[in-house]
Image 1 (tube, one colour):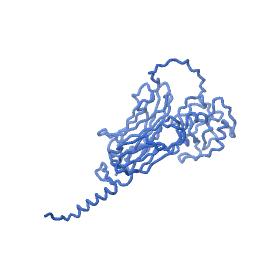
Image 2: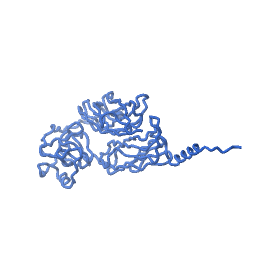
Image 3: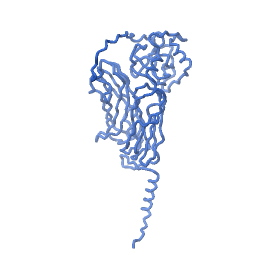
Image 4: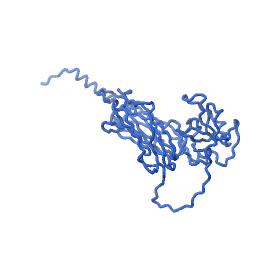
Length: 407
């Protein structure tokens, strides 16, 4: 006859495991061999785009989310726009990290306000709360008509500035925006009231625009043209111009330098149309080059702590890029080449001879601290922007991941 064995420790262990399973917990094993218990629903936070950002139609909008309280049993994550799923990540956290990042690019379409939502699901059906941001999409025509045409007749406003009548009305009704905490009260800067074009000179004859700024963006104010209806600003690490009627100024603007800007380009007559073969590929003499980089905060990144990446994108070709493009960033473990995470950024149109400092691009690495990692930054990874060569589009960075907040 079998005798009943008295094993209180064994019984207690079985009960503990049953309670752990009932609570929907999972065990995560960090690289130092210790065991960390993760319980409850995952938590999703959208890092990009920023709330209430404004984009033109057809622009690539990078979507980045961070999932924390994660673990190995994350079954999938879904990205939706206006309630429709545009991307599903299946088993996105096979390493079992307590936190990881998701990236996807959405091409903006449909003028108006759109909701971007991200949600993560465990294998047992438990889901995070939906993380959401709202963005506004405007048409290219809508932005262009807010600027004066080259033949617009300006009206003089108090203070010596000149604007079109429509812009003057906007200036009367727009509420002033606050100066960011990083700027001193006397530092001249502009704050955009809406999405606007950024041009290489003071006028819409400087076409096409070299880029754009979303609503609420700020930039250092460097000067104005003699008429006062265009402002010269610092755009990345270059100088550019924006229409004064679409921005607010702050700081001491009483001694702004007056700059006539580059010569206005002469109108050109389009060449007679010629037959183009159906298979003709777009021609470009642009040449994008990955240049200097930096981390913010400086030094080696820390485990499970978001840091920012900045990278110089130069065009050493003889023509401007035909459109904006993307920047692919991936992190690998040096010892075995294991891919540990990725994200994506973007760059605007780059003029010949121009260098733009792109960033910040947020990134998080959550595994294998104390080891060497390699970050590979690729400019224009899919070749969507035609170039004469792509052999200089990659920059590699080797660093040692610090322990940070990882157990």
